[in-house]
Length: 313
Ligand code: RRO
Image (tube, rainbow, N blue to C red; front, side, top):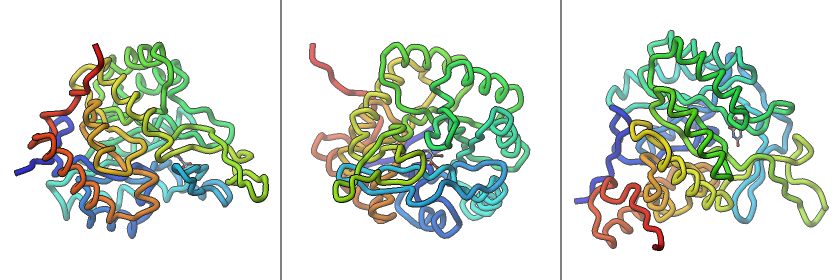
């Protein structure tokens, strides 16, 4: 029998799959569909203190190899998602849920985290340090000093399981620097990675950018992201304390993509662009394809191959 169970700290999940925040998690209808799906867990849309309408449309486009978005953090506000998870926790006491939170300023990051700390939320919180799409705001985790400032302040009061959503990094010195920072904090997990920030795609019929906000610049997801996501999961697994789990996100379209992220060290795997394009039925296919790969390789649990990527001597 195949066992697809996974763990993140003290939390148990029937399988490693979930949505990437921002995809299929804006409101109760989408979240309920995630709950009803075959995924092992789910995360709510990154929430700010107050609701936000986000950027003007068009703000998302499908591409041949993925997607581009500049949604601009549309969300229904932290109170909406806290209400949702409170209900969820009563109905699913043994199925932990994730909440994503974000601020566009230092003060807002702290304020929204306080709302979670003061609530009866008993799942895992993820602070998004990597939103690429708020005009005028850099991605927090590309600024080591700002990252330290936020994490220092958060851990003065935040006692619930907390992870950080990171942007992609591209240089080994950046991995060294960021891992050294993250290792100083009692983080439950990191989630690597957010979309590839500030890409640009052009509609060849009209010579026009594909999305309206920020002159067409937006976060790139899907197949474009897979090799970068693998590298980020692998590089952080080689550098982080073993107690800090890793959620691998980027470019999952098949069960083999899930397997590859686990091979690099992921404890859980999120699906973004492909979930947006195919809907929640994708989780059944991904689980059956993942099971097929494991059977072919002779594995009966994820732990047998997690982190077991081979290199060439
Ligand atoms: O809402 C968005 O534009 C968005 C966010 Br907050 C994020 O973290 N990543 C992304 O690709 N889009």
